[in-house]
Image 1 (cartoon, helix red, strand yellow):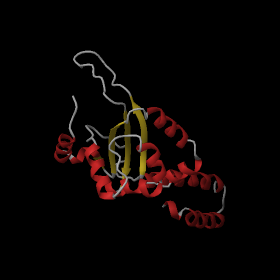
Image 2 (image 1 turned 30 degrees about the vertical axis):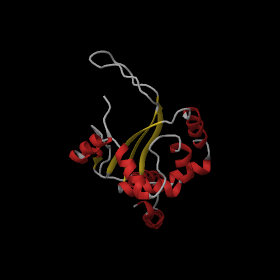
Image 3 (image 1 turned 90 degrees about the horizontal axis):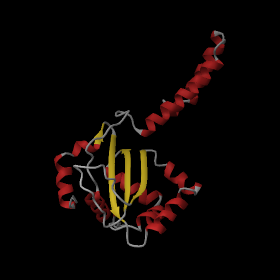
Image 4 (image 1 turned 90 degrees about the vertical axis):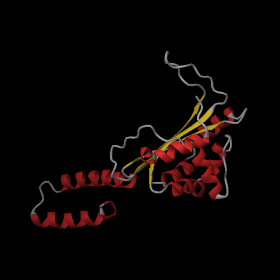
Length: 201
C-alpha cells in the first residue's frame, strides 16, 4: 500500500531515532523515474561509475560510510499473505549511511559533484536543484524512515574507521621492522613512527 509524503513525515516525526545508530545515520530515498528515461538513467549510472575523476571527487566525501543507487522495476512476490503489487513507475532507489548533519550531507553532493546529481537525479520526479532550502524540503518529503538500522561501529565515523585501518597497517610494518632492534634503534624508530602516523591517531 502506498504511503503519502504527509504520512511519511508523521512517521519520521514519531520515530526519529530509527534512522540513527551512534554517529551513523541512514538515508533511504525512492524517486519515480520519468517516462522513457530508464535507459538514459542506466547509461548515466554506468558511465559515471567509470570516470576516475568523478569517483575521486566522491571519495573525498569521507563522512559517507556507504551509498548505493539502483533501479527498482518490480517488488518480489513471496506468496500469501503478501498481496502482489505492480508499480506504476520504475524507481531510482538510493540508500546511504553517513555521519554528520543531514543538511550538510545533502548540500555536499551539490557542491562536490553537481554534474553527477544532474546526470542521475535529473531523470526522476522530485529532483530540485536550487535553492538549497527547497531542495532539502523535497528530499525530506521523499525520505523513508528505517524500520531497523544497524551499525557495526556506532561510535566511530567513517574517517575514524579508515584511520584505524591505516594505523593498524602501519603498526604492523613497524613491528616487523623493529623485531630485532636494540633499545636505541627502537627508540629512534618509535619516535619516527609516531610522527608519521599523527594524522591517523
